[in-house]
Image (cartoon, rainbow, N blue to C red; front, side, top):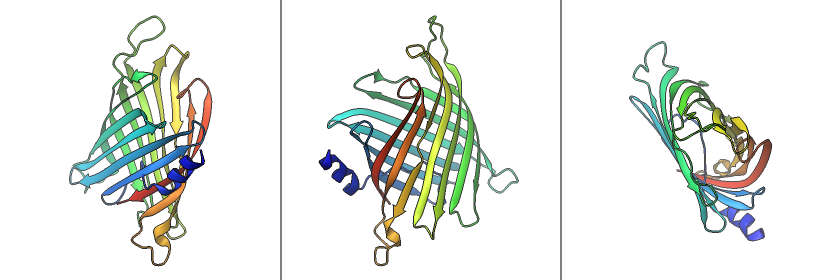
Length: 236
């Protein structure tokens, strides 16, 4: 366990599910103290004239790869100079697998996103309301229940002259899970980072050290769960 904690604190791998003013790529490694596993994430956010593209890939290790999860989304906004530039059309795909459950059901999402930011971009946020199609989902009677919804919120807040960053997301959605007798799921992953490039002489060392707490209801199992991590990230 000590070796895993050391790796989690020294390997530069990251996740940051937040909108950004400019292009952003990062990688991160988390040591999950609840499950005694490592999770790496590779993430990219890139804006353009027609909106923005975002994706991330999660992989779990114990010690070999035991699971993988992928999300990619596109915000469409061709009206950036209009009075409704705060609104965009959101398109998204989710999917993955693990050694215990096999492949997850694919999920296809579409809806609208409200986005905002402070004048200096030190604080950003967004809220999306989406239709969520999950083909292959059935209820306890074997009836197809692919038509669902999801609400997603994302935030990034910088404090103390960018020394600290508080960011994360929450998802709340409907998905029939007859094996655990639930249909509504919530997950949030707030993160707190100390940005080491604020140290004098370290301006080009884009390392952040911090923690994440995965808060969920009916996600990893029925009921509420909280799983903290120790983490490090490198931002490109």
